[in-house]
Amino acid sequence: MKDQIDKKWTGYKFDELKYRIVVNRVSFKIATQRIADLGRKEVIYSLNNVGGKSLTVNFEKVMSALSYFEAMVRIVKRLREILTELKCR
Image (cartoon, rainbow, N blue to C red; front, side, top):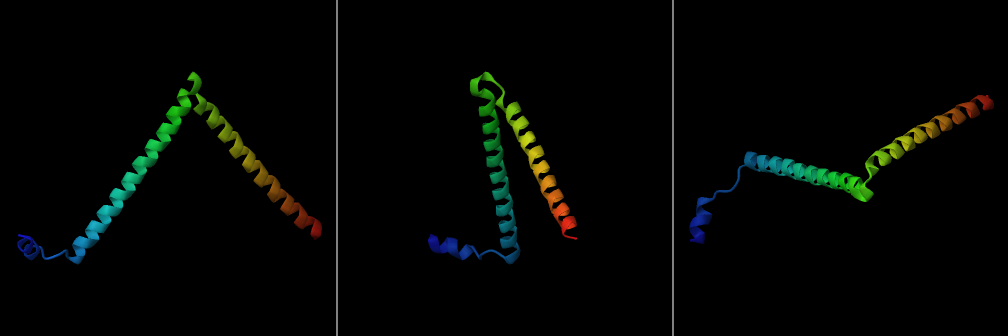
């Protein structure tokens, strides 16, 4: 019976292989995105449920403040570079 099955199958054509590769890559990316989305949702839900308080709001505020602080540090650093260049001239 195995000989009969092998004789019927002639293999994949190059176009079929390319199609299968594309389908596999897309399905892999979709699966990884779903897993990442589930992970993000679980983190947010667990932060919301800790102590009955909404920690995500506080977390977002802290992250926003940190991003402003980072921007200020970059501006100050760039201003120092400009001022030192002016002093050297």
